[in-house]
Amino acid sequence: MKIHPREPDRRHLAQLPTPILRADRLADHLQVAQLVFKRDDLTGLATSGNKVRKLEYVVAHALDSGADTLVTLGGVQSNHCRATAVVAAQLGLKCRLLLRSEAPDAPPAIGNLLLDEMFGADVSFHPPEEFNGRREQLVEQVMDRLRAAGQQPYFIEMGASVPVGNWGYIRCVHELVDQLGAETPVDIFCATGSAGTQAGLILGKALFGCHAWNITGVPVCDSVEYFQREIRQLERATVEQFELQLSEEMTPIHLLDGFKGPGYGIPYPESLELIRSCAGYAGLLLDPVYTSKALAGMLGQIRDGQLRRDAIPVFIHSGGLFGLLARPELFGTLCGSKGN
Ligand SMILES: Cc1ncc(COP(=O)(O)O)c(C=O)c1O
Image 1 (cartoon, rainbow, N blue to C red):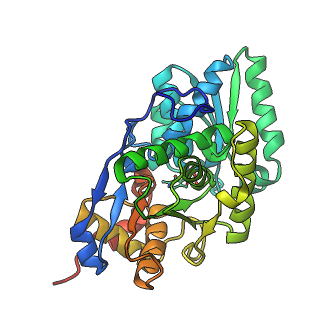
Image 2: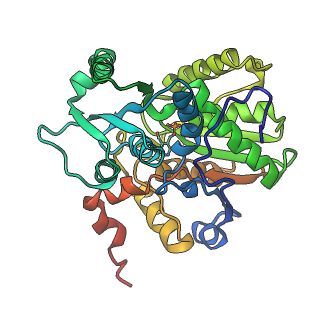
Image 3: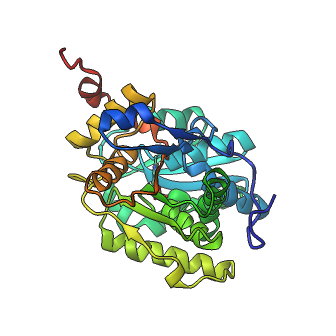
């Protein structure tokens, strides 16, 4: 069923709606009144997290354009690349991944990279200078080579954070309206990495008239200023492409600074402690790159009394499990006995 007259075609891939979990034992442990999780770590497709929602729309567009090969790019442990690889495997498409890797040798096939290979993706590694500085040429070269080999490649931007992909989180808002009610005060938090999750949530809130909802993104890389621009640009492009009747006053962008820590993918004591607490008190698996930092931000806001007293605090659990499993050096800290 269409959620909006302007909604583009969608390929059903995710198991939706994802459940809502009230984590009361965890809330008691963390000494906050309540904590609610939207379990987007359970979207299915080999626990693909938030990416599969965006890919439902992007892949429908790719198939519509006659593509037989999905091409995308990201870090060596990219959740988005792995999600693209699993979608390609399920649909019988080929998958070509360009991965940024700092290591001079081929990185170890663990976590997401192990799965990329198991799902049959064709992978190449690129040092940051090449990946960041000559990204467009790199992608064009790969696309040209695939075309020359008789394939029909379709390029998916980093994180599938493009206007058509934004419908993934517009749909998530539609689900949340069913689960919580558009009139209920809700304070939603998500991790922001390539910005499509937050942009979709903001657009969905405006499209479905959730006036009592606040949406806050917690950047895990770059800066708040960077994301303010990126999200605005993504919103504008989506509004324009799908002719949505929305003004910028209806789509305010809230970003929370201070929880990236020392850098992208580098955890800090509080984010690691939260991974332990969520596992031990709620049976929830957070990851070291995205969800643990975003939840640290949300908890900080709750403890500082920044959330409305009558609002339900909802954390979008966007997945990332395999990123956790790719970090054996953290296992000692995460699993060590507390000695009591
Ligand atoms: C597990 C996880 N959570 C959150 C995000 C952030 O989502 P977005 O890229 O849409 O900002 C990502 C990807 O960047 C991710 O892999």
